[in-house]
Length: 174
Ligand SMILES: [Cu+2]
Image (cartoon, rainbow, N blue to C red; front, side):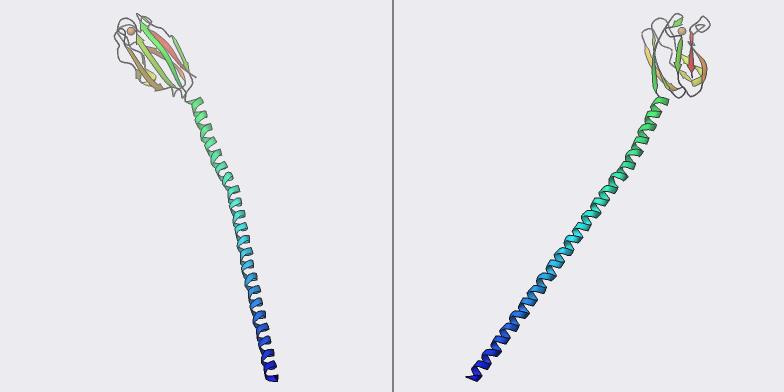
């Protein structure tokens, strides 16, 4: 009987030990994984923060880029102000031009749309090496040049004595 009860006690002790060990193991297992989970959550959180931080940085960087773009836009706009293309319709007839004065700003691109209405004429401004061909009546030619010098420059028709008889005008670059 005592042998049985002793064996029974041992069994109980062993069972308790197994349960304790198992429970402890399970508990520590749970704690381990919950810690891991917490750590990974924290890690995720930190990463999110990092992402948020870097997201915060990105707009600043793109803001700088935007400012650079704005600078580019400004320089383009500034360039637009400085380097506008200004178009003038000029027609020629014996012996005058329809436009006797053309005013532009230094740096402007000057576009002359020259139409010859009657006779043979061209449109020439020596200072900018700009000239149309000699056009027949009814022909039109468009030329462009950059007015890169300030001053008053005479434009004229180089055909015959047209310039001497008044087929001329002033290009004023301010
Ligand atoms: Cu002429």
